[in-house]
Length: 310
Image (cartoon, rainbow, N blue to C red; front, top):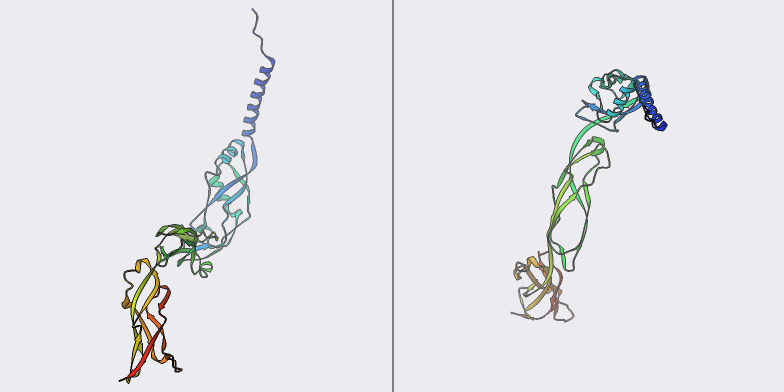
């Protein structure tokens, strides 16, 4: 009976695989030393204080253990942070990490810590305060011709809450938004705008977004016919005016067209401004409490007067 032939190459590969497995199992069973990086979680930090320098977030541990345990630890290091109970060491500003060895060994299990880096953990705390400051809008608004911002821009909320070290917050008087850039505006606007992200790591802001809204109006023209009022005229004199009325031309917001009526304006001729050289013309002046009008002019700008006594 003829035995089947065995490929020498296949036999070699099979032996090589078996040898590697045996070597790996032996290596994993032996003790080794290696470096692992483990995140650090802080518990029971003072609630009325805030750190003024970033806390160490990761420890570099030189650990010793069997290959099996080291491999297990390497695979789970980032998933299970080590815990540091600050109350156990407080009050302290500089903590040698060698003091953490026993506590960390209990958490790691099956491996022994040989060395810890960094050597020192720093705890620099300052009083934590809360402050409310106004929101300041950063904006670049471009309106279509004849359109303009009717009222001030509304921001909601008008103030934000800042939480951080007292040394930082004492100099902050307002908080800015990101830039709001709008072009060719000709209608009322509203939306959301992000508040600027704090550049200081231990400063927090609430909320992080605010709402804005504003109304838009457009300019239109109006003309009113107004009587002329003479002031500072001596009681012994009277005047004849020509003309007796004047045309007031001005631009006003479209939304105010119906409300800006003649009763809101008064045109006066001050008798004391009558030229003593014999001119019979007095310049006309407009008096009004209306503020949001522009391109105002009177026609005519002067009135002719004839003065006579009683």
